[in-house]
Amino acid sequence: MISDRAHVDPSAKIGKDVTIHAFAYIDKDVEIGDGCEIMPYASVLRGTRLGANNKVYQGAVVGADPQDFRWKGARTYCITGDKVTIREHVIINRGIYEGSATRIGNKCFIMAETHIGHDCTIADKCVLGNGVKLAGDVRVDSCTVLSNAVILNEKAHVGQWCFIKGGTRISSNVPPFTIMAHNPVSYYGVNSYLMGRDNRFSEDEIDDAAKAYRHLYQTQTSTFNALKRIIADIEPGRVRDAIVDFVRDSNLKLAGVPYYESGD
Image (cartoon, rainbow, N blue to C red; front, top):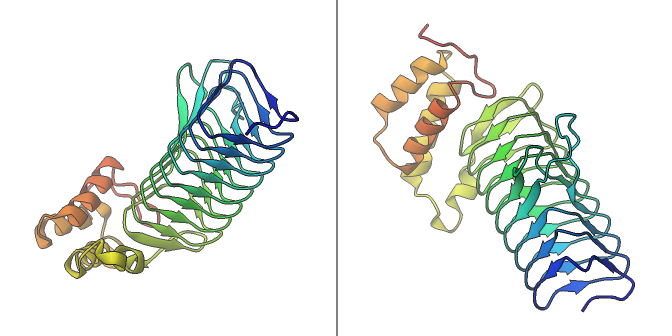
């Protein structure tokens, strides 16, 4: 159902069983997947590619022009997966370089008044609370929760299965399976509740995460030395390996941990 009071550019590609309510705005160069619903006064702008069964609520702007002086009008994109919920007054910017894209994974829930900057990548099954602000080039890995009013500064990377408490500001990299809180940000424990639900992770795997983060956050040693201790003390496994890989990929720079290029 497409209301005759909505604006739908003739060039837009609309899938099957799509509902577009009155006063919604669908721009040119837009693709909307099957089963989507676009609520009144929502805007889906050029370069946007919505997957199937998404719902965009009132006042949201998906695929907005980037808020970055480096963008010079290049053709860029905003791409979402399937079953994404975008609540009221969310703004999602496109990429800034020719062919680049902001990407939202499957089954994400983005709450009201959240802003996602250019070239961000949000993986599957993430929850972004009310008023979350993501600067450009931010990465959020799968199954992570950003509580209300969290701020991620440019190029921050948050690992999988993290929980960031409300109002926390992140300027660096948050390793997987952690809870972070306060300003300045500090380690608040392992995200054991969500990890343990429905037997997603075993008790031994959760314990491995706790052991790893005791080395990183509670022994007052450098990240370099902590990483060596994790490798020596904990048997390889998907949780331990995910932590080790993240720390290495982050060049040892982690939120809440002093950075040393070599040992103590």
